Image (cartoon, rainbow, N blue to C red; front, side, top):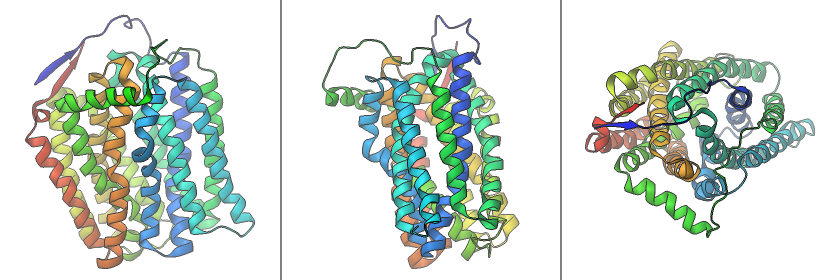
Length: 413
């Protein structure tokens, strides 16, 4: 199935104009801090509780707000001021993160405090993300969506290569709470950059309607578009596995590889995942043009399931590093491909609702995966948990293969 996306009125715009550059830099700065926090938050919980279930819960709680509030955030992004939503979310996240080093300084930090912060930051991300992706197409123009996504993901992943390694080293030498203090500062800088954007990021005056009607419109569009419906369902199965596997990374390193929470090599596992994501981001536009978006989703899911099984059997650090790299290539390829297809097939006036709804439903698998992985690791060990987590992703392979997605190929003019 080949479709052409028609565009008009944006041919003369440069990708890196003033406002896109600010948006791009704000996201890049935030990602560097967030990538570091992705190491620090589970480490803090594991150090204070030694519980696999609570450690895995960090990833689940960060993703849970998307499942709870995604529909409302998406509708709000299509009716409210998107720039104000992004700035407000940045400021709230900065405040929440700053409480962790403060509590550590007062010797009052607990695992439950860290879990509450993880949930709060997830809430901020949900509302920020709805506004950011609602504004994205207006900033770059539809013909440059795939190229702009590749630039964004490539840059962010380069930062994610360095940030986890640095965070792991700092956490081992000093304290993980210091990493969160730095992350709070990145949110403040991001807010300052976004405040300077001049391009109108909103769709313009709209007829006031009930919020429920606007949410329903986004849901209907997603449901009535077979490609988007299938990719969203497949994304749910993929992210069940992602939530559990990522949530157990620290536990897997400790109990299966002998790399404890104070070991400096822990950051290298996160870095290997970032390198894999970089490879996927660089290759995705070319592979999509060559094989089509449908084959990217199908092939990526197959590689992902194989990588989960490989990680379950890994017994040495070097093998695990390779497994994380391959796992991350497949994970980003499938998720990023789904986001790009959704952006290309969605009208501008529905971007906030449809993109947030799709991400809410797809990423909604993450907290379930974190719960499944944590309970499985407690009961049967982390290796068996990884094998269990591969099952929903395998179901996603069947869904994609049996749907129109398999032959999808979008050409942008």
